Length: 168
Image 1 (cartoon, helix red, strand yellow):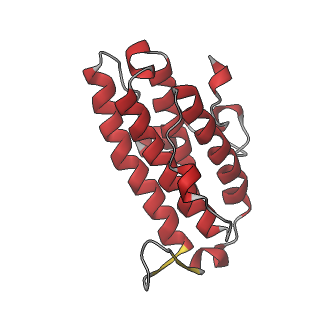
Image 2: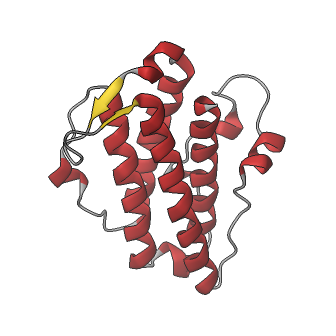
């Protein structure tokens, strides 16, 4: 289920980024860019922590000056996550993590991935509302829509590939 939730998150984020890129007022909106950066910042933090990788909070906190820069961050993170999640063994999900932002609290990798998925879900809803207020049309992003439409077979199928800003 964690693998499916992460794959859905990638699909939903990519769908939303596609819709924003296709609508100029959304693509140039600093509020949306900041919200999207917040989504990917948290995602990158928990992903790094789950892999015991360093995380440069100061550098990562800088909001890119364009939607293309944010899309690059999503693409890099999504690509690495899809590879990681496909090879993830069940036992790894139970490993405990401690965040420097929540000292004394431990969460498992499964719980960290659930946090990432739920966190991005909530903020995608905010971004979809903002996109609509700017005259755009949010894409369907429901989990059951992904279940129905997801590609059969490997994660590397074209429909699951991470978005890049060159895909215009």
